[in-house]
Image (cartoon, rainbow, N blue to C red; front, side, top):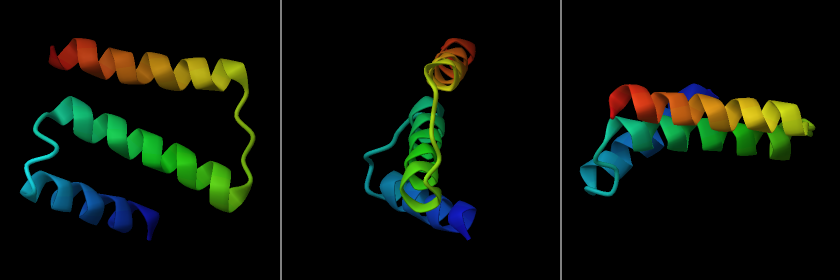
Length: 65
């Protein structure tokens, strides 16, 4: 259900012209899933995990760039 909701949000952003690149789409979906995990499931994110998320987003940026 979370995947469907986040996909619908991203498609709506694309239609509005706000999200124009694949990098932004992947970054926004990663951030939304992180926020959902923290807010709804009381996940705790360590500094090491946060660094991994940031490095993953940076890797997507570098691959697409």
